[in-house]
Amino acid sequence: MRSEIEQFFETISARHSDVSRIVFVCIGSDRSTGDSFGPLTGTMLKESGWPNVIGTLDNPCDAHGVERELQALDAASIVIAIDACLGRPVSVGRFIVADGPLQPGKAIGRRLPAVGHYSVAGVVNMNGPKAYWMLQTTSLYQVLRMAKEAVIAIDSAWNRTTGITAAEQKQDSQIPVI
Image (cartoon, rainbow, N blue to C red; front, top):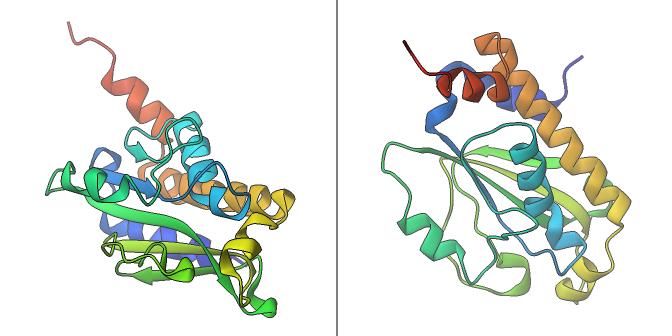
């Protein structure tokens, strides 16, 4: 039985099979365990061969850079926003997926623009009175497991639709035509 995140990405890949138009905006910081879900996922997507990823561990797309990055996007891009969030204890480790944008920074009181045609919020820890502290004390193992799960679902969905991985498609586009 496929998980909700696998089904979500399969639906998106059926609508948008051209990986060159897909842009993952992975929001967060490498300076907070819980908030590193986005950049960690972005790094794994890059390593998997995805061509359009904004927000990695070496170049995070945090609250200071998200507006600038959004302004630089091509209007034809299909944006999938990925960010961490806090939730109920029973939801920790799960994903909130949506056809529509997410509101980054909401848990810590930041007012940033909505991001994405599609969105994934990874519930990395439970919500509490001190959201920033909850993100700081989140289990790295939990965040790493969730990032891997998201990337496997993404790779699987487009591989299932196109028959080739993003890395293979990127490699094919770099072969010179004679």
